[in-house]
Length: 327
Image 1: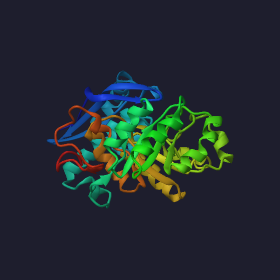
Image 2: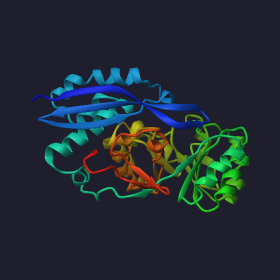
Image 3: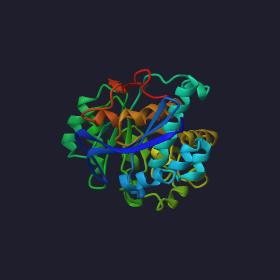
């Protein structure tokens, strides 16, 4: 039987609003791709992000442009030339990985000659609110290994201090989502060191970060919006000490692995991130997480209802999906 491709829009309601410097989400809108061949069906998920000019409609339109190529047998390497990095390519690439695993009877881990994904610590996120509310949220998860705190430019010192006071034990990632400027960044350096922040993620806007090349941070700075694929490292490695690898930015597991290996070859720190998504996005990301210093994969934990058989969390330890879920 010839290959067939199905792409659709799925929506997942969130348990509570997810508030960052860029806005608030109450639902997760994803693209689900299924590629079927010889009775096997591979699945993949992408999360279009307006920050990168993407929408559900644009992602579905991109996928339509390669329908015939997929039907004719295009593989993952061919896909890299057919679509740009982004959510659409991610969904198709991950579906092709899953399809190959099913057709060959070999797991994605086996195809990569890598260990099977295991339970890993993941960051649990405290979103932007009043310092008092953020302290309450942090206190509720003070026992976990890693907390990520979302901040903006309004009063980040109070926000970060409130979280650290309520949760003195966990490692802490601070994520301003590009909302700071140079003056604020410089003024907060002593506080970040005092509060033992492990990583500062994309504090200033991508594209306005050239001054970081001459900046000596008190804590490592991790590129997020500034890094998509391995080719970006020539510039990014001069400005940041670590990179956040997201499959939706890289355009799939194939390109994300290339980025992760290239960043490690340069001696950079590595973080695996995600969008607000279902476990179908997290399953392939676990193959990047095993290479990483930090994992921030709590996207599905914000959903009222995840896909059946997805990941589960116990005290900030993320267990892989059930066997047969993906890959």
